[in-house]
Image (cartoon, rainbow, N blue to C red; front, top):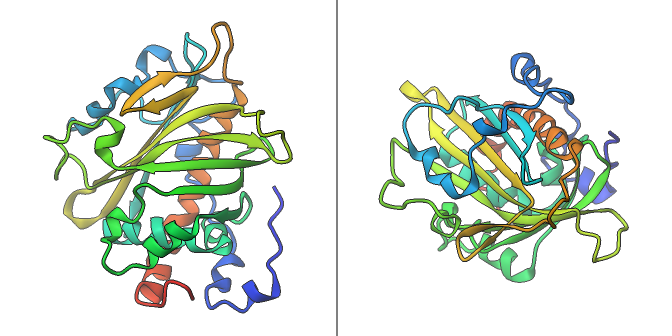
Length: 279
């Protein structure tokens, strides 16, 4: 994957130095579980209508892997651990990075090319009266990203946990520390507006590790589903299937981008958490 060249204005930003750092290699044990020719048993995948099972203690039998389901949808799960990272850092990161394309690029320069949001969303992100954890809700990010299948336009609509179908009576510590999720769709760069590859539901489920060691991401993606009134709805024609390279590519990309982020976030957060959001 190519790394986007920064503009002179971007090079002048105080955080440009992070863009030029060597990318942190992915966790070898984690990336070894994701192979293009090895799918998990679909019976071990978590159906989207059982999303609240993420609130159960412990772990599922499969926390990292991908597959094509019998109904043609794509599924992937990735379990990233982030020692030294806190929920406060993540709440900040998930709104701060949306303010500029280069900030999105810091996350993973080989695959993150750009991001844009509406003026209304930008004003909400800059509003100190909106809690950091809530700045993500109701926002749509248009990102340009390559997950291994070429650059594409991806539109991500972020939702509050209750809008994703979580049992809010159980949505508290130690069951969960945060959720960053929603729904969206993608299409190849330059495609016609009607050329949507597949809708998807996304969930990054965050728990704190014991003894203040950091946090863990238990990510889940359900490709081929829309989220309508808090309910997952299969939205691919009968007999059709999500291409296998898409869930595999995203699982592989997920490991790489979060391994890089965990090595940068504590330092970026310490330096810029109190800076002007528009910097």
